[in-house]
Length: 186
Image (cartoon, rainbow, N blue to C red; front, side, top):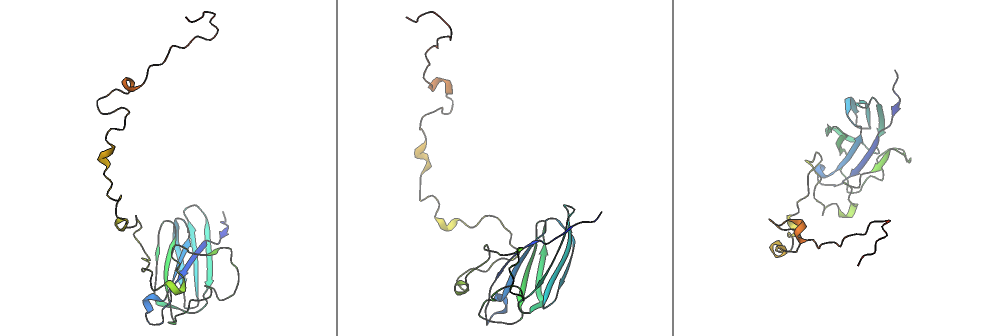
């Protein structure tokens, strides 16, 4: 049985810094659910991925980079939902790449990763992205809790309380007249 080859969705974001190579990176997320034995070939000029999926699908993509990547420094991680890359740009420069790919084409499978993207003029103020992040909830301690709200003041707002039967607190209903009854109620 032959599998149809699909191009996976690819998300990307970048940082640039002319002085610090650690801040001169491309974040690349290749969405391949349940990747089985992915074949990854990273060269300075391109990335080629070929993988089967647990869903009995075949994925393949080739990305020819706008400029060269430092292969030795770059790294990746395969998870159950995607393959995540931190690709280090070979040339240190302050300006962002205008696009990820060498050719100036609109590729339907390539999109901006807005979860990791920062504007070029705001990148120094942004905290570093944890490329292989632990996920979880953000730190909410800076929000200051509930503004000092004391929930004990809401102790008795009516309704059934502890040890009280809910039927005791409801008003009694009047008896209903049967439908079709000819008797008049006095």
